[in-house]
Length: 135
Image (cartoon, helix red, strand yellow):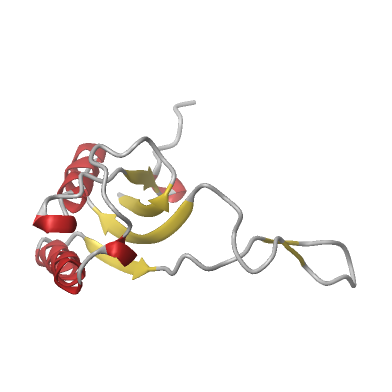
């Protein structure tokens, strides 16, 4: 079953550990965090659980259709939302419990002072992988 693990810049439950945003970290702290992320991806690949990962910038906008022949409507140059996605991992694992274990491992990525972030991550199954309801 495939699962999406979403990392958020902000939003979600209150943080378990308060820390500055990454733009306030030292270069060594950022390097340690990124190294952990690369090593985490390599461990997923070794276990055959890796599908994809991408990081996103905080810049973006919402777009919607506004009718035939009209330009799309946007909210401006930046998304006005309390919940900005920083990036994701797509994993292919045997169960929901395993998906939670993998997300827990990712939540331990180091932050300021090399301490685990304990960040909240959102885990969502792919719709195509949800078992059909019995008839």
